Image (cartoon, rainbow, N blue to C red; front, side):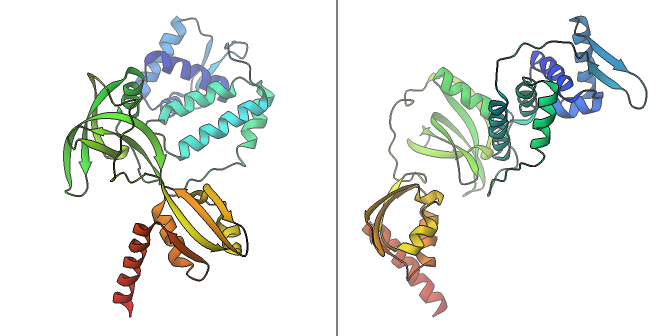
Length: 311
């Protein structure tokens, strides 16, 4: 975090939370206490009206009359933004860390003190849970460098952990898409080492650098049969009770009903093959796979393997 961002962060944090000591500020902004002391001195030199308290319960406050210019948002708009921000934190957006605290303080400080208290009370009763969050952490430069590569239209150079051979590999990549799926953040792009489209898990990127070289694949569709996240079409005959039970599931998002009856005929466009497979194998009396033929053969092979093991 840059110094200007830290100084703003201290102002917004004190405005929102009231008195905070140096340790609390350092934890909020993820810097050392020594850095906070230097930043406090810098704010005093800028004539920001800070109040310092000595002793056991000491800390810093900002004069309540100090005005922070802000955009105009309604209370409901603030609540919506805070909800989105909390979801982003639960999804572990890479390198969110201290930026989360700073952005949250900026948003909530739009409200007056009484409304801030009400909103903070509200969020004591609102929680968010995202299943299957895979990574615990990301390298510091990963997200900023990827975002910059899209904005500047440049290639990146990464050191990437390949779990198959348990080795670190170096690759030049032309990024095309950053996305969240199956519990983690991924980057798709043209891998110059493999000369084809590849998808990389961000938590497996150890080092990353922005190159001067222009990304010529940014606006080009890249086809790859090995792409794990390619959408595929599945054709089913399914009982109406099972359809009602699963129709809101994420893997049924792109579903077309061809025949509506006690036995329904549907087509599903989905990238979640594993979940579709589990659905078929778990409901043999309620769902019948009609196509595609290659996927039907895949299901047959799984059933043969199960029979060989257990019969």
